[in-house]
Image 1 (tube, rainbow over the protein chains, first blue to last red):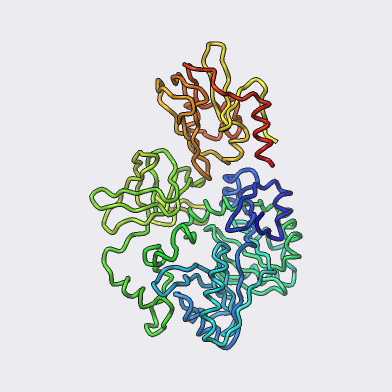
Image 2: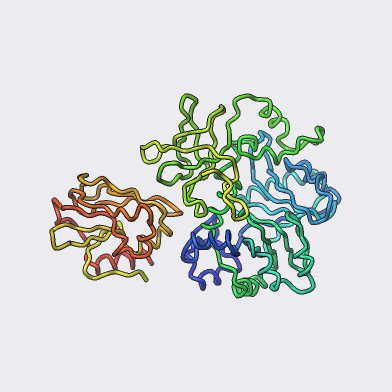
Length: 363
Length: 129
């Protein structure tokens, strides 16, 4: 038996198929992963993401600490509530985890890191924090729900206390705010608009019920994965890990090189990699033959070399199979994927595949 | 609780088999199997005329979650495949024992260890525990 979120009983009640995810018993789907996927693209769906780890960073040293810890630069955050996506690197420039950092003021930040990497993340963060005047607090008592979809904010609004409702609806994309003991952010992992709601665990079941009563579909981790794949949002452990840098994971845009004297962990290694030639490409693939691309399948590029699919699957929005892949350097637009001993044709496409309900690639 | 027609035979790999009046056998995957796989998105079918061994690979069903082999419950020659699955693999989810059939074989050896509905139910009960 794995760990359970405060909503575990609600999932069982809703008929969820429960699977292990990083040591947690989580809902994979509640009947149909495809229907849940479409609900988020077309209307609104809610995901229990309480397994994710919330870490508050406070103290006079919070800002310099995070400027050292993260490859992206929290000094870019000027307005309270602004969020920043960043990698946390090791000394070799490999990715320990990816995370969202929320800025409240110079001495108060909140990090949301992955569930499966919790132990190593906390150990790393605490070790690095020793040299700074900061307090690191894991907020395991908080539950987290992601409500996503074109109608997500509108449907969620009545479920937010009247005192905070208007402010929540006025949040700009990628901003968050405290709402009493809760926290509301206009962030997510689906390529759709929406909220992420953080609340004390004891309030979570009632909030869940109200969201479902508001016509929001319960969605499991299966749909979360196909949605994020369509949106070309990286999944830690699939698309990047400690053995690969953000520069070969499609995450070069998250590395803040300027100012040049900011000494973030992994910077020297990353600068060497940045100058190196022959860096692997991180690309989107659209399968042209029939079939389904899957994680870790081998990709062959004629006359150039081979690489692999880091995340592959079926895209319910497109109706075809898509993938993210790390491929050899070079100028080419087609590749072949080895599936059960056969070579299937795939075409490189510009990411993302889907955003805000719209297919963004040429079919 | 998954549905289990009493007039079919089953395998421990969650295929079902129906003996037709003309001597052929129709094969699909069970309700339990389709539910475990989730929404099906692709089915790889064998060629007509292909000869399969008992327990050999016969087809592949792929769901949003994973790919899964379908094994031949009996040896024989493929005489028909359910072409409709190419465009609508979810027929297997919606009607696993009917429109979701996968392959028809002319069996060459049809005495192998097939399971009665009761024996297959016992396997499912075991999985639930």
